[in-house]
Image (tube, rainbow, N blue to C red; front, side, top):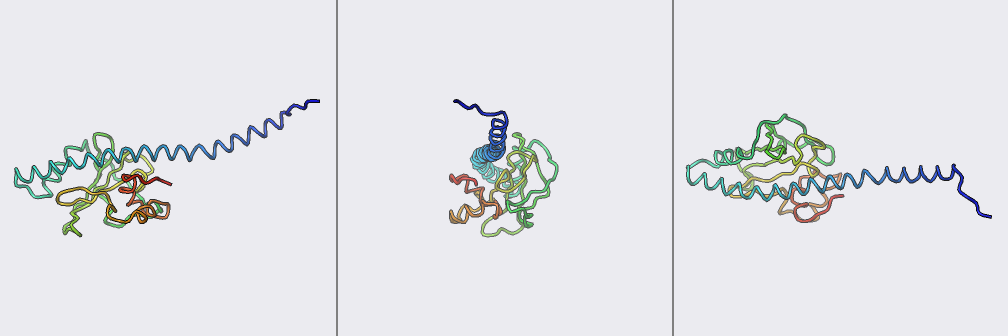
Length: 192
C-alpha cells in the first residue's frame, strides 16, 4: 500500500527549504554587491593613470606647483560637493587621522572622492585619495565600497601595492582595516 505525505510533513519540508534559502541568499547577494564594487574600483583605478598625464602637462605648461596642478586635474572629475559621512575599517574601528577626510566631492559617476595632501611627503607619498564607488550609500567601509590610492609626484598607486600578498589578504578580512583591499582586489584577490 502506498503512503502519501501528510500536509504536516510537506509543511515541515517547505519551512526547512525556506530557512536554507534565507540563510544562503544574503551571502550570495553580498558577494554580488562586492563583485560590482570591485569591478567599479578596477575601472576607476585605470582612469586615474590618465589624470597624472594631465597633472604633469599642466605643471610643465603653466609652471604650476604639484598641488595646483593636482587640484586642477581632479576638478575635471567633480560634479559637486557631497555631504560628509563617516567611513570605518573592516574591523569596525575608525581610521587614524591619515585616512579621515574633511571635504567630500561627488563625481560624475555619483561616486564620492576625497583627497588629503600632506604638508611633508612620507616616503615619497604626497597624499592620499579616497574613492567610495557607490557614493555615500552604505556600507562606507574600507575594502567594501571605499578604496584608496597613495599620491606620488608622478603616479597614483593603490594602498599596500608593495606589501606581501599574505599581508594584503589578511588585511581584507573582518579583522583587518580593508586598506590593502585597494590593491588586493586589483591583482585578483577574492573577498571572503
